[in-house]
Amino acid sequence: QVQLVESGGGLVQAGDSLRLSCAASGLTFGAYYMGWFRQAPGKEREFVAAINRSGRNTYYADSMKGRFTISRDNTKNTVYVQMNSLKPEDTAEYYCAAGQPDAAGTAIPDNYSYWGQGTQVTVSS
Image (cartoon, rainbow, N blue to C red; front, side, top):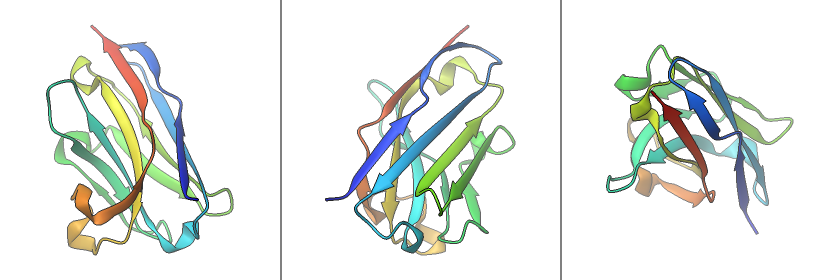
């Protein structure tokens, strides 16, 4: 079966960096767009970033542009998000997802078929 396993979360201070990883198995990784979403307590799931099948095209939420970088290694079936200049408002559970959105639909959670269990990121001020 399809498994997406996130790792790399933790407790950091404002201004620090983290790199999250998501290892995929049970699917043809290179055939899927990959996305990162996050959800803070009491809030809706929020789009963070996405990357197309080849890795040539990336998509970001406006608040993450310039701070977060998504990448993928199709030889390792893994997608990453490098998060720099972290802020307390970045505190959330971070999820990776695999799907088949078109380029205009990368930010829509319903366009993703498979989800990981999440990894917690906590940024202290």
